[in-house]
Length: 211
Image: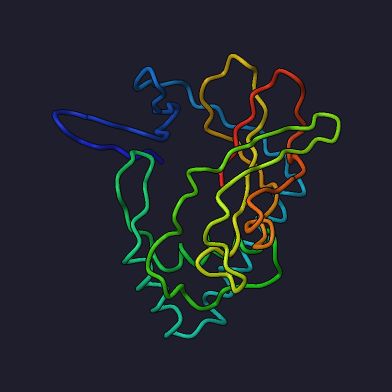
């Protein structure tokens, strides 16, 4: 499916229609032939699909109408970005899935109740990978230690994702990403954390991260 923005004709398009994929990089918009990747059906994929299926069933079977309504209230207050960079509003179901799918990566717990703070968490602009250990396949991250309270507010956890390593000549990256680990409140208060790589990396490669 593609997102299309109409102006005088078509002013922006992102996604796939038929056999074509429309996208944009730093040089501008482009179109290429769509390729359908082979499904490796890896253990990670099987686990992720099982989690999504479980959460969808939990939304319909276990949550009360009141709980679902409060997720809807949260969704109506929180703007997200689509592939064209425009503000959109997801559904309460979408936010329940995205929140708890991330939650299940590092914890057995689930948030049945919607957030009471009607906004997304603030970004940490100081987050940086300060060191890598090729032999040990680990990375050291430094970040702001401010705001990490023992009880989980305003900062509770920060999930880290590693991009698949690329050639040194690569200047931009759009995925794939793989979950690494979670920064705990204790690590957060210290302002630094060592985490094992989720993709193997070698000398001379570029590696991107997101949190």
